Each structure stands twice: as C-alpha cells, then as structure tokens.
Image (cartoon, rainbow, N blue to C red):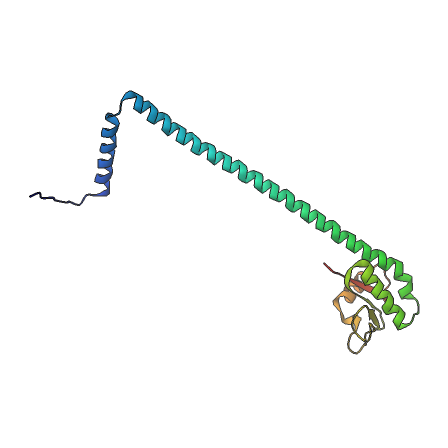
Amino acid sequence: MIRLEVEQISDTQLYSYKTKIMHLSLQHLGFKQRIIMTVAVLVAVALSITNWLSYNNFKHDKIATIEQKSRLIVDSAKREIELSMQKGVDALESTKAFYQGPRSDSEYVEVAKMITKAANYASFTAGYSDGRAYGDSGGDNGVFDVSDYDPRTRDWYQQASAKKMERYSLTSTVMLQPAI
C-alpha cells in the first residue's frame, strides 16, 4: 500500500519550487538547446516590441486620418451653410425695395414663397413695425393676423431692431430661418 501525504505550501514556497524545477530542466539542456532557447526568447521579445510599435504607429495614423476627414467634412458643411446664407441674403437684397413699397397682401406672400424656395429656407417671415407680418406659411394664406402673431414680440424681430441692421430698415425687419 502507498501512502500519500499532502501538505499546504505557501505561495513563496511554490515559486521557489517552480524556479528550482525550471533551473533543473535548463541544466539538462545542452549548449545548443540553450542558444536556441535564448534566440527564441529574444525573437519573441523583438516581435512583441515590433507589434507594439506598429500598433502605435497605426493608431496615430488612423487618428490623423480621422481628424483630417473630420476637418474636411466640417469645412464642406461650413461652405454649404455659408452658400445657403448668402443665397438668402441675395434674395433679401433683391426684394428689399419690394417689401418697403406698398403692395397687396397676396404679392407680399408670393414673394415670401419665392424667397423661401430660392434660398432653400424652411420658412420666411417679413415683419413690420406696425405689427403686420407676411410669410410663406401661417396665418390666412401667409398673411398673419396681428392678434395671433405680432412679429414685434418675437426674439428675431427684437434682435434685428436692437442691432439696427444696416441692410434692412426697421420698417421691414426680416428674419431668415435656414433649412439645415
């Protein structure tokens, strides 16, 4: 009969036993095997370092590429917005005299619709200091009822009035709302 006894050993003792076993196994290796094992370890370390460096270079290149593409997208969107805004300004400049003269309600509304379409805006409203407002939508076929909608109480009208916009007199304050 064989009798086995198992005793508890500490982590320090276990590490010491593992080190002794490795040392004994290396002693049984010949000179050639030791050289081969050393070269293999060095190659593994070199590959690990090379992979790490390659990963870092790849990561930095990808980040730079993403930043560059992001800048291009933002610049392109900026140009589109500027072009859209310029179309609106051009449309307003071309109709400025029209909105300052006496016209019928339907003429004001029709020109508002043309400005909205030409400038690709979501909506267009012309507000006057007497409370009249004309636009491409809302009210009765584009004519706003002062009791329901007074442009003078709106932020856009008040901001334009406060700035005393050079392009537009206070009697024909105009607000653009781009469709972005």
